[in-house]
Length: 188
Image (cartoon, rainbow, N blue to C red):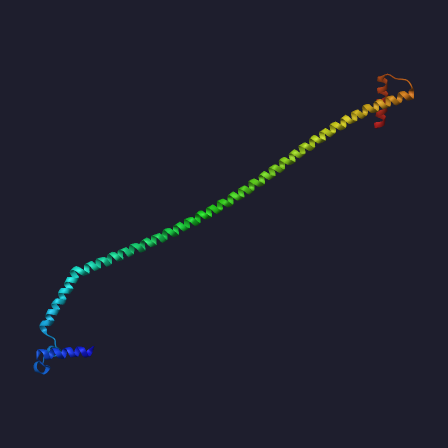
């Protein structure tokens, strides 16, 4: 590459017909034409001015718009992440509340079931006691009735036995008095 540059410089010097020894000008020895350099500088400045005036603002505006869109996207992503975090937190809170309520419901149901069982047990015990008391009452009544029947039967047997032994019949009042007196003696 350096060789080509030197070759161009040398050919430019020969084309102008001037040598470095003749003119002594460094620029012409390098093959640089002042007029051409001035036109190139003016052309470059004109291109830079036109690019700066018309092209660069459009490019900078589109870059700024793109940066703004990227910033909006990042902001939206941060907001979405914050919302997702808040929503997850809210969901976790609701799940914890639902679990707590479920535990309370289960505990209440257990308490109610226990209360119902104890109530049913108490009612069954009361019913059993009532049935047992009725049975005792009936047995007592039957025992009293049996004692009365046995007493009456005993009176009749004693009267019959006394009649056979004595051989004659006493009055019913006299029989009863004798029997009652005998029974009192037997009870003692």
